[in-house]
Length: 247
Image (cartoon, rainbow, N blue to C red):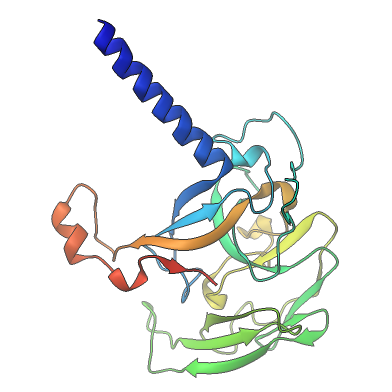
């Protein structure tokens, strides 16, 4: 009986430590869709740093309504940065995990004009990297571009189906204090802050809903991999994406 009690205590301590680490430090997430291609693909398993923006109730499993706002950490910059890849709770239900790139900070004006992202009236510079000899699952031509923010703070890749798509022109979105504007890197295949929540979009994201910053791809498997099928661990593995630091 004493031996069983010691085993139970060991398991309980291990679970408690794992829970604390998950709340305070790191949390794993699986990429469920193509909205962040070409930087994140379905089957990527990523690690998110929980301390990057401080903590809110959404840092805790189940998002218990025990406090409002965010708890900031001393000696750490808790301010999200433009260009961060962010995991957050969908504002319309506060329960679904979403991942997008942070494009608009409080006080910004964001607009898509003829398929070009504009931040505070300045177009984001882009360079075409690939063109229509790549296609997506629907047979549409895929263009990959490298975008650089007007202030030069960040350069990253995006994916696009070319001009003439639904979200290529938008009104000006003015971002109020305490909110952020998110976009998927797969610009024409992402329901994000450009889309009103009433139409199934994300809308603006409150600071409280931020969970953390995506830091690294830990593992990655192609479609069809399953933990219940050990053979698929090797036949579906994408080793080239393992331990890839995210930009």
